[in-house]
Image (tube, rainbow, N blue to C red):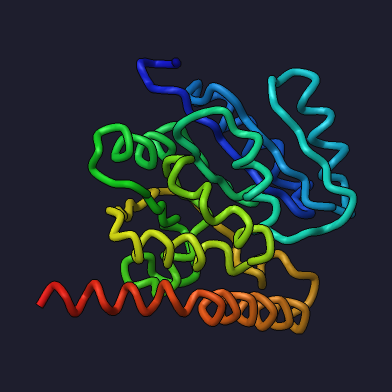
Length: 233
């Protein structure tokens, strides 16, 4: 336990994040809130692996390196399997401006039984964070490990649809979900990261397809959510 917190695992999944992985890991470590830090390198082809190995010389982390890219859902599921703590915090590897209070905003509602899952929305985004229709897709989230154990197999194959899958699972189970605004946190767009505009558009289309597939594959959850809503009237 650190700073009177229960045991918490941080899971950071990275694919070609050589320019940001060091600062993200430093922010996670410096927060002194986590009992373990798990980094899943999802088959990166740049210097992400090298940078993680260098960081590990001075920081206590568990690093997992996949020989090929398996997708975000697979990497997250693998991180959950390795995690030993009751509470899990997922954090993207391409963030900037990450601070201790951002983690506290994610964690505290879980500890206080205010929510079963907390979703953090970066404020420094292309779309106004107050009206962002994509906020539920955020990679910054805290939850209880036990609540996602039943969907690990689905997570493995969900790729960029993993956040949609988790969200549907929580809604179908009528779990309490809370959104928090992470002031000063910046999450780059695909246009910021891609070498060309056409490549960014291609990645957007691919990600959209994987999200749509997650919706299609979880029709039962959608039906259950609709039934729950009807029963409330």
